Length: 267
Image (cartoon, rainbow, N blue to C red; front, side):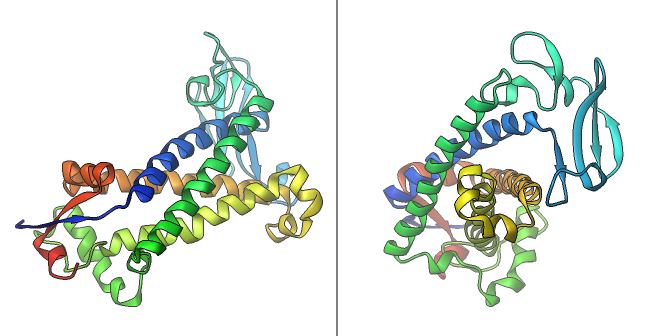
């Protein structure tokens, strides 16, 4: 690949909000799993209903952990159901202590951590949107119809099935698709379902909880949104690693990015 010019790709606010979002998201997942441990199941219903259970992680027998997904049960001892209690032992617990905040089982502290970092994540998202709009490149980050035919050629490039990426601007089609989906669909869904799950908010904004099908359904959508965001993080990390790790990391730390020949033609 021939190298293009150096461009100042990310403003200070964009970079700072990016790293704050990374930290906040990690803490939200960890504290969210702590909260999940208090009621280790998900129901596709307006209220708790074993007949509509989608996911259940438990220890039906002492020392045996199981995970039931859509009616299919798997033994997951040591990983899920019966695992690390966060205090040096093992106990009946959905997710292990090494992945939750705090490590020991404490629903109240888990909620405090979750709410604190939720506000940080929201602030980081708003900062990213506003700074991108001010810089004038927010429109360039949104997927448009002309980008759709370029999605597979771009993926083929990432998978090393194509020598060069399709011509694009500062952001390639897959990046646009990811930013559009995550920034304007999944993230708002996670925020709104999180609000719907809050007892205090539910008391004054009950129609929001009703819109998502009730508290249990809102909990299901919230958990699914988390999984989708984790999937985005994995794909995003893969893309960074396969499209010039040093160049990508430099751009997100210093703001300066060296374009490829393809990028330089439209940037």
